[in-house]
Image (cartoon, rainbow over all chains, first blue to last red):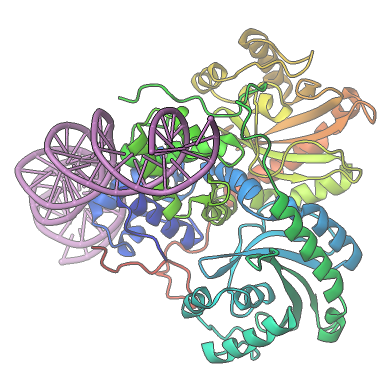
Length: 277
Length: 277
DNA sequence: AAACACGGTTCCATATAATGAAACTACGGT
DNA sequence: ACCGTAGTTTCATTATATGGAACCGTGTTT
């Protein structure tokens, strides 16, 4: 984690992460126990974040949770900095044609970050699932993305995997994972062989630019009751097409007119430019 | 906007907001033009944010956009600090029974923040996703929420409305809005009469605690081609039930055991507690 | 009831980090 | 080679964050 180090802002964001990691509202003292910062400092950081709407304080429960301002900000992030908006129509199409759960993921801090998803039955596009993170070493999308990282990045990422044994099939160490990554790289796709949840399997492909830079990954998930690894493997050509199309669009992805000085209609850019005593 | 004022962190978050508001990647100089901060200061703020993953820098385009770390953080915020997780099953049920677009919203800085959504079975393409914000004075959920704010809060919120005339039906000023809010408060529900988009109408209800504290709002949206205001009005009883159920659940909403000292299994809380020279 | 412990909040002298004017560098154009 | 624009670094100054300790309010123990 490249975190702490950039002054006060870094510390504040640390605290924010820490609170988010709890996954539930936390009391100040709980935070303090787990924090490297002294009481008064932590207190002020939390105050500032709360005041800024990055944290929400529940007076009843006397506890802090990530605030709604994050949801607002994240929408912008999701719409601009993830593959989701580009990939959307392709995911829809893919989802319609395979009828199974489809995931779109990117790599973030050596972890899998799901940025979009299609359920077998119902299409829902937002971060009820998008925004969720998962382990890289035991998911289809995770392994595939690791496989297509360049060597230094891959090593760095491997070093950060926890290798928690979720199932009997979970890879146990960096060595076996490394071996599989080689295979994945050669094949161009990979599987999750019940490594994360028993009975759940998936096939995944990387989304690569023409220059082989890793953008993300795509997967179709199912259960052993419904299909098999070789069944999923039949989807590879379709997935490969989809991935390629997404990659192509992602490269073309230009945002409207950075030249024209934005004399459009409604409020787009922020006002600001006032004094700030 | 309660923003600027809390030191460096406040400024950094200002900048983040500003960038998010652009809605597209921005160059440093564009930012500078719209920023109250001097070059060097802004530069360092942006650097810090980028280094922290709150911003993403695209070297090709030489521009900044909100970063993926926000998506991760927002997932936690969405799951913990919005009505969405509580309301989910009720929205599903409502959506299934009315077959029209359903929105769940909360109020954030006098604006509407959509926190969840169900698409119509025959979807109409329009705005909105979770995390998206919208105006309060010309949407069903917005007006309904304003109506059930207590007086000082309502006045504060009214003062922040822009009254941009989206359509011929958009309310033009605080006076006419205030008049309608009184009616809405009396009726217990409100409409959007093509005030935001031509042809689009909706009926909305507040979600209130037993103590009449405003939690959020719920709406069903449709088009004039498919139904009418009186058609939508027929849904009010169903919506009222749904809103009440959500409110009830939201109040019961207790998070697991703030008492037990968390000696559970996997990695939940953050590590930290290391030195930070 | 007094003493205590605990979570939370405020103080204040000090250390540290942020500031911003100006100087500098890297490009792209001419 | 020259200029202009966009982005980056420097450095003395100033403002801000820091954190040990004291303080407050509330619930608990003796």
